Image 1 (spheres, one colour):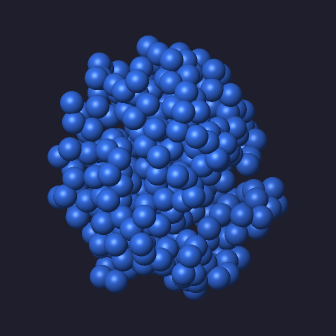
Image 2 (cartoon, one colour):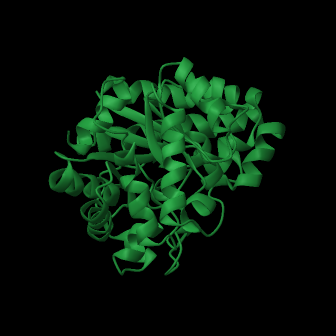
Length: 336
């Protein structure tokens, strides 16, 4: 099977020759390409070359064009900071009041020179180079995560409590922006979109059902209508949210290492949906030995036996991970 066939079969509940390996790679790929993070996040060719370098060396089964969470914010007009060795970020909140929201216009994700267009060009290049063999994912951030980017995390959390109507207006506006961005990525050739919503792990189930889930569902429905698939990636301990997260309708769910794996197996398995995870990126990978990492991988694969599952860390692979440990991680499914 090709890597792409392996991933798609796992998502659909079909047979695979081995468990797919689907790590999230940013700093790890950037450092091995010998470039700054600024270049990785701002030059689509550099990002693609860095990702494809990892694919050639380690034969992972999926690649993403993810670099940072501020593509939409930048194109909405946020003042951006591009550190040499860290992901870019907004210098200050873009939305502080309802009047700030009214001033914003929906950006064109294809506009030349925009950060969204840079990601779309990365997809076009990566699909052309590796898309026949490897599953290539676009990337968006869900409206709740985007709201935290444009307002500030603490500030948006306060809005949920003190000005929920304004919070919904912001989420409504961002949902339309994110749908346009996702559709443009599908049109560029991405068969699947990765969707981050990490900040949602910070809220209660009731708040998730009100402020996050409906917007996730709308975006996922629109992506499905265009023939695409969705990987929902919510970092953090989502144990209290899994039952609701499953209702999003995503095709693949990421499980952070903070979530007890057996519980995740039971819940996602009973729902008959595909999930991936959940090695501790530090303890089980970066600080591990090849032997111990392989042992942990095999343990997870065996626990998930009979379920729709892909091997992954709970979140991003740290840059400081030794190559021999990452190789052991990638090769572990062949040892089962």
